[in-house]
Each structure stands twice: as C-alpha cells, then as structure tokens.
Length: 374
Image (cartoon, rainbow, N blue to C red; front, top):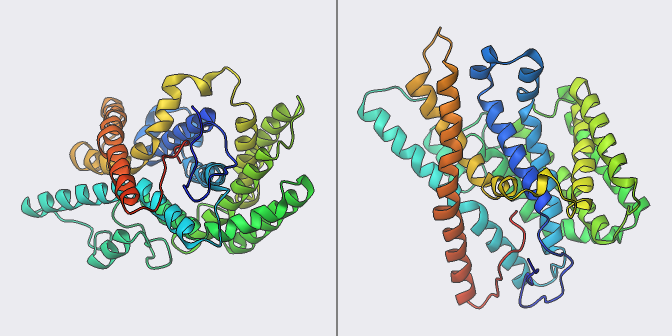
C-alpha cells in the first residue's frame, strides 16, 4: 500500500507503507485485555501459569500506548506545529477515528440501562451516573474527574489517549529535537521513564494502579516513547542483523523482570523493545504478517470497545453467584466478541470515519486517508 500525504498543506511525510506487523500486535494485545476481563471466569479451567498470564492483561494497555505513539508519529511526524489548520486537521482526524465507536457503545449501554429499569433490575448508580455520562461524552473521564471506572470501562484508556493527541504538537517538537540520534533519543526515553516512575513510586511501581489519577501520565509518557522510537525508525537507526534478536531478548528480559517487580520501570522498556523490533522486521514473512492476524489487528479497536459490553451482558445472563460458570458459556461470549467486532468495524467504525473525513474535506481543511490504522 502506497502512503498518502497526511495533509494537503503538508505534502512531505516521514512515514512509509502500513506496518502490518504492528497492526497484528495491536490485535493480539486487544485480546489479552479481553481475556484479562474474563479471568475470573476462566480461572477454574486454566493451569496456574495460564491464569497468571491473562491476569496481567492490563499490561497490554501500555503496549497500546507505545504502539499509538509510534504509529501516529510515523503518520503525522511532519505536522506543521506552527500552522493551526494543520493542527486542527490532526485533531479532527483523530476524533473521526476514536469517537464514533465510543458514542456507539455509550448508546448500547443506554439501551441496556433502559431495559434493566423496565424490568426492575438494579443498576450501579455510581458507574452510570449523569455526571459520569457527561465526562464520558466528552472523553475526559480519565482526567481526574472520577475516582472509579464508569460506563464503558475500557474507554478510560481512550480518554487518556485523547490527552496525548491534544499534546501531540508539543510531542512532535520534543521528538524532532532528538533528530533521530541514538544517544539523545535514549536519554529522552530515560527521562520519560524517570518521570513515569516518579509518579508511580507511591503505588510501589505497580503500573496498573491509580488509573483514574495517573492514567494520563501513564499514557502520555509511553506514547512519547513510542514517538521517539518512530523517529529512530525513520532515521534508519539500529539496522544491524543482530538488532532484532537482541531487542526481542531484551523485551523478554524486561517483561520477566517487570512481572515480579518495578512494573512501571520494566514494562515500558519491554514494550519499547518489542515495538521497535517488530517494526524493523515488518517485511519478514511470519505469523504477524498473516492476513487473518492483521485483520484481527484491523478490527482490534472495535474488539476493545465492545468487549466489556458483551462481558456485562454475559454476567447478567449467564453468571450466577456461588456457581462456577461453564466454560462453554465463556467461550461463547468470547466468540460473540469476535463476531460482533467484524460488523462494528466494517459497518460502524470505518463508514463513520469516512463520513466524518468527507465532511471535513468538504470544508476545505484537506483531510486525506490515513495509511496506517492507529
């Protein structure tokens, strides 16, 4: 796939064709999160090591953040940060990507709540309060306005990413200052990690804690690390034959260390090494370039946004207190998540994105199609 220019007013771009392997990694990460949210129902059927793995699925969100920073800088690193029209176009394109499915899932929850009220079922008032609805509609629920998860629970990370998008012009300036030089880039990554761990020291460096208060910090720092990696990638840094296997080995080492201690220090390093190594090997034939695996990545945003709603339906209809939920019910719910993700992607996410993009184009602000789904 040939790259298309990001903006009519900015014909020069950094990025190349779509990095399919990164899309595939996003899909696998999304399903790690899905399994994490079903861990209590899967535990009776898993060996201890299998349950230990899926119970750490919250770490996949950090992989999302690093991936997003990489992919978005890869596509928009040529942003004219002094041109308000360029910046506005970037913001509108990101909203066209994330907002339609976000509103769609809130609508599904509204229908569910209506059905529960009509059937005289109780609903958790705090999770579905009017105040939290307002915060969710504006995608600011993770900006310190709430102390707990509300409405579509996974959307907290989309709220955090929105903060990263708003800061992207500043991030671009900072990343450009590295000029793709390895020593400067590594120092910048070290400083970002230091900042992240300064915030997470009170949580004993557990990165899955204090989501409502530290989610934006967690996202922005790792998003920026991903952007720095993209600048290194575009500068053709680290090209030796041994680079990829060494980076994969480092990813495994950091993941192992973070599994036991210092999550907020080790896990971002693990994902940074994994993302860069994966991008470097995109043209290699392998599992991450299989068409169906890439398709799982293509629909991963739909999977991520709908899976908790399906989980809530599953819990209402099939889970009974004091009883082990049959494995067939759990597997059926997982299958439903995958099946529903396909039409959501094809009939809601993509058409809405194209429609909003066309509306922006009709107003002569020059929005082009994005070459990499982010």
